[in-house]
Image (spheres, rainbow, N blue to C red):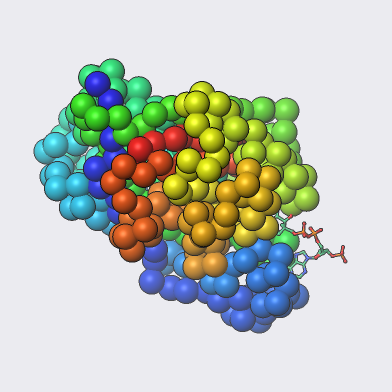
Length: 318
Ligand code: UT7
């Protein structure tokens, strides 16, 4: 028994914030943001929208593409760093919005690697026969945890959601998954604040040592892709599509170059929505599926890195 993605979906909030808009908010320039990150614009959720709202749109799109209804879903995993509330989980809230009455539902917190972690977890349930159709979602509203006066972080992130339906299959879909974490880097990228005594204690905004994250990301992404390649006895040239976490075009290019993968085999969407953390990989996947780039039988490699630090990859046959 294997698990296979049978449908993808995504959602970006209507409001677009361009680099030029940011020029009016902090001391930055369109030129700096484009050349240092590749980002041109990002989407911002309305004040009344939550991660589960974005997840709902993306999930409905994925379920429609998969040809399944709410009744068919028997597992929900939501990867998010920006949950609707402390509890219940965003997955439980999404389950209610989808009208699903009883199935396991839980969140995965692995920051920008969250979708890879969630997909790898869902694969365990589906390929072992415990579930038939898992809904796996990455949904984030980073605009709520950004300090909009901090130019070193506010230009980088955006809001959005992506989802897939992962189903039982006799043909291999997911071939292998590779997950890692190193908690001794936890202070390099964090939102250190917490809730206690009815108040937020500490800093509730993103705190990041950009250069350290950059170097670490390029190093571990190369390593984890090499790990997936070795495990499956393939060459980097066998990969038809690399779908990286969309944080920075320079990280994406450096990783592809180190691996010898040409950029025309790399799906890039960072220009359109910036870093959407756990949503970025399923957003890029859905883009490439819907525009017809990804064909049945092709080898697709998803890879991500994020706060924790966490990092990982999933190799699959489409
Ligand atoms: O998903 C994982 C999460 N995070 C990431 O993946 C981020 C990884 N890191 C990065 O993408 C890059 O390190 C950044 C885009 C954050 C920064 O790029 P950089 O090439 O590493 O720039 P830097 O931090 O070395 O800063 C260079 C200069 C500094 O000025 P000085 O000290 O040289 O005078 C910054 O103050 O750029 C300045 N700067 C800005 N200038 C205009 C920082 N942010 C901005 C800005 N606009 N928005």
